Length: 138
Image 1 (cartoon, rainbow, N blue to C red):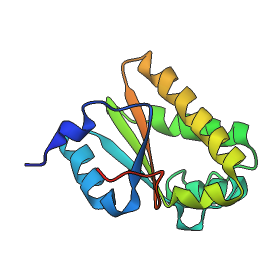
Image 2 (tube, rainbow, N blue to C red; image 1 turned 135 degrees about the horizontal axis):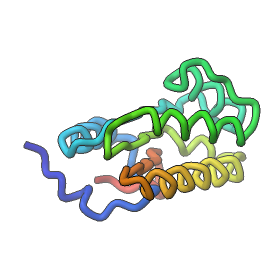
Image 3 (cartoon, rainbow, N blue to C red; image 1 turned 90 degrees about the vertical axis):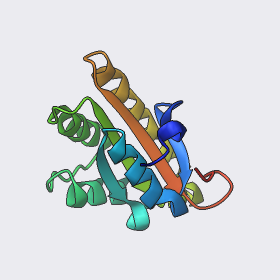
């Protein structure tokens, strides 16, 4: 059985090292979370985020702006009956190289979704995974 104590003090947005992706997925699954994974290897700005999210889990609902991306993602989260949902976005460090504003906007949208579903009894948390000093090991 996995040690789930690392999940005991979750924030709405959490930061984890890419190397811990398998362990994080295992911890979340064993704690009852539905895990939505976004492989951010090819995400470096807003347009590439919109495209990858559409290809990976938003069933080809390609967004052209932040409003449609937020709407699609929120509807996607609402489509689950699960009470615990986690978005795990790997390789997010690529957004730090010139698209920090886009990353902050995305984090704001994710935080808004988290607040909205929490009012209805669902926990939605985000894990931003990357390499480097901003992303601690579990």
